[in-house]
Image (cartoon, rainbow, N blue to C red; front, side, top):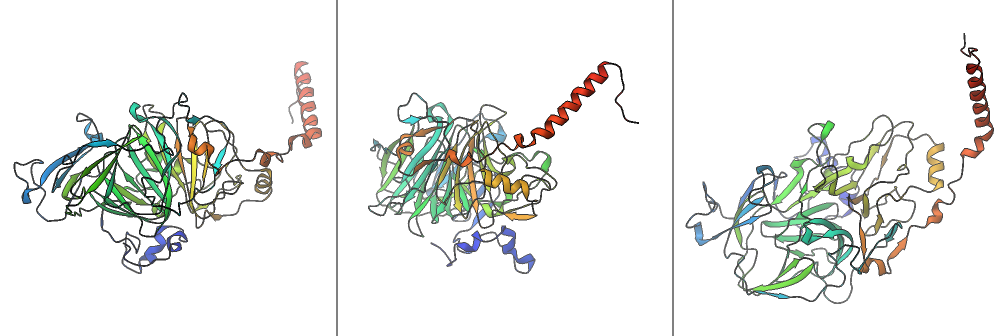
Length: 496
C-alpha cells in the first residue's frame, strides 16, 4: 500500500522529474513519495537480490544443497545457445518450485480477448478508416480483476508464430486474491491510466502509477492489487521478441530513456500454505492450475530476465533546435526487434512535456502517411496533436499509409502566426504503440459502443490556396516560355 498520501496531480503538473530535485537544495531521490518499495537501478543488467543475506550460492548456480533447504529453479527467456548479449535467464531460490502444482484444466474463453489476428479469422476486421474509441468503462458491478478485465483492441500475427503483437485495455474493480497470472505467449508492457497497480512478482513487488510503466516478461508470474480502487490502463503485448532500449545513433551516450532510470524489484517472499489459482495464457487460451502454496515464495534470485518499471517523467526529450520536425522515433522509450532488421516489431513512444523552439516551422504534426500502424492512448492531460476530442483512457488508431493531419483551422493558424518558443504537452502524457505490421481490429472493439470514426468532414475546409495565385503563376510560366524561346534563337538572356 502507499507509504504517503500524494495528490495524483503532483507528478502530472511537473515539466520533468528534474523539478522534484529542487536544483540540488534537497537530497536527491529516485522514487515518487508514495512508492512503498525499494528497487535496483539499471536496464539489462545482471541483478541479484536476497531477502535473507547469504542465501545466493556463490561460484555456482545449482549446488547440491541450497541454504535453508531452498530449491534452485532457472527461468529462461531465450534459447540456451542464444548469443551472450541476448541470452536471458534468471535463477530463483524458493521455498517450493513452480512444478509443485495439481495439474492444468481449461478455463472458459474470454470473449473480449483475441490472439489470432490473421484476416482469415472471422473475429477480426480490416479497415483503412481512422478509428477511435471513447474510454472503456470500468465495471461497477461484480468482481472484475486485472485478468478477467482484459479486452483486446487490435493486433497482428499469432503467438504460435512467435512474431506478432496484441494491444489491450484492462478495466478492473477488484484486486487479484489468491490468484496469479502467467503469460506464456509473450511480454506485457503495462501502462496504467487510472489508479495505481501494486504488482507482486516472483522477483519482488512493483508499485506502478499513472505516468509510469512496467514490463512483465514472458513466463513470469504476477498478481495485481488495486490500492487506489478501480483501475484502467493499456497493454502492449509482444510475441517472439523482448523490449530493449532504442539505439542512440548520433545522440551519443545520453538522452531519451536512460538505462539508470529503469527499476527492478528486490526480493520479498511470502510462505502461505493456502489454495492458489495460477492462470496461464497460452496461444491466447486460458488455463488454470491450483497449488497449496504461494507462488511468491522466492527468497533470493539473480539474473537478467526480470520485470522492471520506468517513470515516464524522467524521459529526456530531444528535438530540433533550428527548423523542422524530427521523425517521431526520437520519442521512443522502448523497442522490440522483428525479423526485419530495418523495422521494429513494436515501439513504445510517448509525447510528454517538452520545449518546441524550431523557427520558421509549421507547428502541428505535418500531414503524413506513415508505413507504420499507430495505436495511441492518453494517460492524462490534453494532447494537442489531434483535432478531435481525445480523452484520457481513450484509443485512436491509424493503419499504415492512411493520411492524417489537422483540420484547416489549425493549418491556417499555424501558417499565419509565427511560432513562439513554447512548452508543449504541459501536464500531459500521450503514448503510441507503433509497429511495422498491419493491424486487424477485434470483434470486441469493432462492435463496441465506444467506437467512433474520425469525422472526414474535419478536412472539408482544407481549401485550395494554390488557385488564388493563378495570375502570378501564369506570369512566371510565361517568362519561362519567353526565356526558352530566346535561348533557342541564340540570344542571351543573362543580366549584366
